[in-house]
Length: 449
Ligand code: ADP
Image (cartoon, rainbow, N blue to C red; front, side):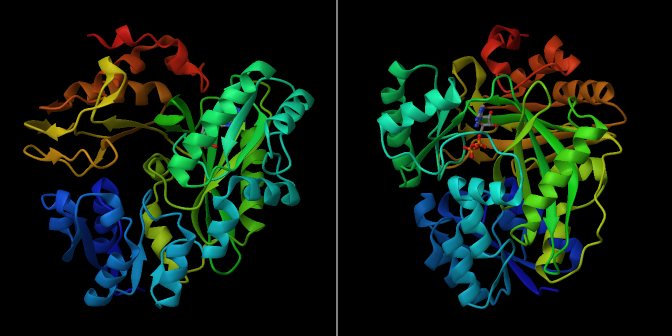
């Protein structure tokens, strides 16, 4: 087992990883930017190294500085968390060359899955269903329009390097194609310095259902069932739950089998997520793979009662997993609490938290790095807490979430708590009858209490 892990991240996930390391008897090193000197991950780690100014490019994304911190602290492994360098094959390669274990898949696996076009091609070879679309990248508008007519509108343009919902445009007719193409390319170039675009059928009224998988260094890959992440705004997840209200035992078997096949075809090592779109007829299509721990992993932890970070560290250390899949025995749901003003188009609302009380009680979990007196910096992601509830049934889980949201006090900044309260009352949500288009019809006035 590792002696000392450096956590190349910040916020709740850094804290989350430190907690598990402590339980496993592994020493921890936090790295932090000058904007994060008051962060809990800095205080809770055994050692902490300031690696630079607030800008991510100068700190959490700065590989030379992170490697210098590894060296001076004599760490033998790096946990990248999610975001930042978690899916950066170059970083994983540098770790390998420096003799430090990158807790995650190999650079080759990240490369195969990080590029969406390559990932789709890999899945087609493995016999996993994918959304119909272009064979690889589009050359120009003319070719795009031709393919769009072959597969039929509506279509979606997607950035091959995409992430966080960026570089995607829906197109419903030929006349819209060129504008969508230009703006998708521009956004992709600005976000990923890669303007490669492909096109696929826009699946209508789809569910976003993803499977958690885990693979070890001995060729075993299993799945840990699904999470439904269909409640999204601008392709970004707001609420996740497991099991999916849309799932049937037969569909779970089929999708789980496809997810394991997807992992096995690249000899996947580590925790990962296979994302699928599921249409109203319960046809499912591979969309992408995330080769890291995800924000919403606690939902799975709660329904199968296993610590996924612990499992992730164990497989990185060479531990062999059992061959059996895991199935949910409870219902869990996560609300992402962001420092955003829901009455102003979810505009970021950084600043000082003057008062903070988090909900407690049976089946309630709050993963957060904030506290009363903490200032949310404007430089990073706006997520400040994850509220996770677990109960015997979905109905009870929603009731518990409502109770927990009512208990949540966060003052000084605006948060997404009012949105989640309104969502829990929404009839379509409560009945489980929703898809990724849910937010288009959701009335934000319902957030006024
Ligand atoms: P990112 O990596 O940017 O998160 P994804 O490929 O995971 O992008 O897609 C994010 C979301 O965009 C999905 O959850 C879904 O809501 C929507 N989406 C992506 N592809 C399609 C498609 N072919 N049809 C319908 N919706 C799609």
